[in-house]
Length: 292
Image: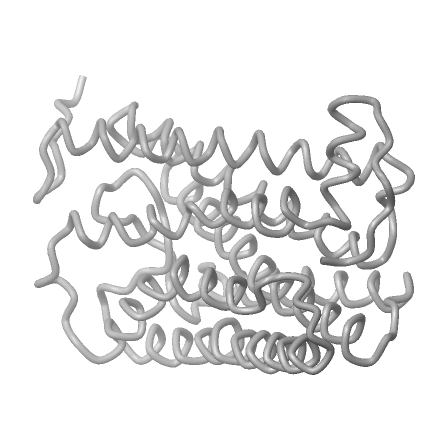
């Protein structure tokens, strides 16, 4: 039997702590997003085109929760047990979840802009088409680093128990892919969210009726994904092997708190969505409220 070797830069205690963090993130996010998703499926009053966007956000976050739980299992096991093929699947699945999640955050912002500022409600045909496009695009972009395409590469993170886009090579394939993804799945969604929520804020200010804090969604995206995205962009231009392996591991761990934050922000404190959750959990109907 092969002797397990702790990766450089880690102690056995570090491995246990990081595994526990992944486990807690995965289980808590799984619980919160499962309840929210079930409320959409089982509560008839919950099912409308705008809430369908949030439901899809729940699904993408559930995918990231599962990704975290697989990483937690491998971390407690002390070695990745699924081979390189499993690593590619793990990296691909995580990338699909991330790309879909960020796209859906932008779509929710766009929908809220139209509801509050143009007084236009979302139709099922529009909502369904946009969600299909989100998932197809996420699968397309996430598949490009797989071996049969080879634009970028999936490989092990420093702890050797999770897989992500390989940022250590710094070759042209990684640089071109990463800068493209940063544009498509960070800068453009941020621009949509910024313009949408700024317009909503201007409307609230004009009417003197502030229905929700318009700065929180954009700030949450930057806090959750900003550090990891900044590091990956940094890796396009500098040698990241000099950065502490612990720090490189902490960044994706921090980003995996996203499903928990999203569930709280977009489901449990959303007046249009939390009524269905309340009805699912208690059997008592809540008063129907439009998008918060």
